Image (cartoon, rainbow over all chains, first blue to last red; front, top):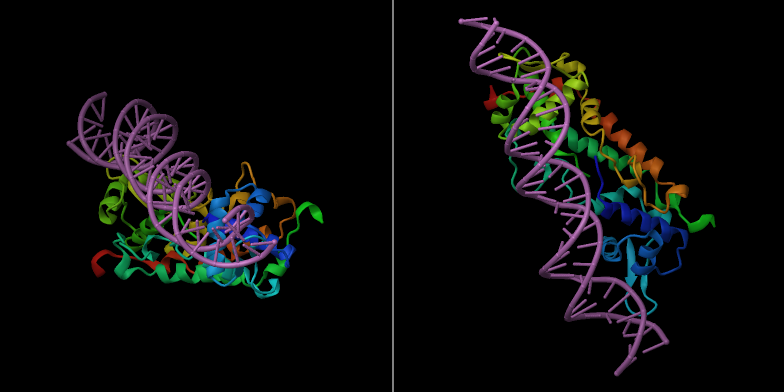
Length: 137
Length: 137
DNA sequence: CCTGATTTGGTATTTACAATGCGTATTACT
DNA sequence: AGTAATACGCATTGTAAATACCAAATCAGG
């Protein structure tokens, strides 16, 4: 069971932004702080902005900040957005499905239920529970 | 959120075996029925046997069959065994961890809790709930 | 006691896709 | 204008899963 680093990076960025809510973070700043790829992180930020979790501003002095208060951003929702195109197993994907059990499979619904349980459990916490500040400030 | 096809194949094999509990299935038979790689499936079967979920016999007339009754094999346990070496996010892995948030991260425990919720939800079902027989017999 | 069928385990190869990099367009502040 | 940033498409890279291959161990049956 794996989440992509796309999701991982998104969570790190949100936690950091929750730590200094009124600062606009550029992708370059966050990438340097986390020592990860700036380009990759920029796409994560775009995705979070498209989902309405971040607000971004271009140009000098621009950057991204939380679109809502940390306590109004639930962790499960974040993960669901960032993992949207990840199929739990083959038959969950939109495209071709080669599983010969599919017509009579009694497992698929149970897997979907468990995935929902995972998201629901995360939704019991919000970003406010996971605030992060660098160097223990 | 993704499970490996290793796990996917293992679940398919167990469901099929639960459909005909007293037959010994060879890896070749199952691979042909599912139209998947025989070699890969053989390793999945090995892993399930090592975990005590299957009993295998080599030689002519050999194969694998369930080590216990289907109602005594919980789905969550199966998934946990087959996904054992999959880290949910980078900091869950045994090796090097590059995440700069690690010392003060308040997220990790919540992710671990959610993963447990996923397994627990699956454990509410057993193989007996997911029996499969080919061609709707 | 052979012989053929099968698992077992290790290694090598292939392949898919996430991760990354880069270039260009677009937007906006100074 | 000039500069700083996001946005977006495409190319490249890297890694790990998936697959293939091979040798050894094991067992049933004649």
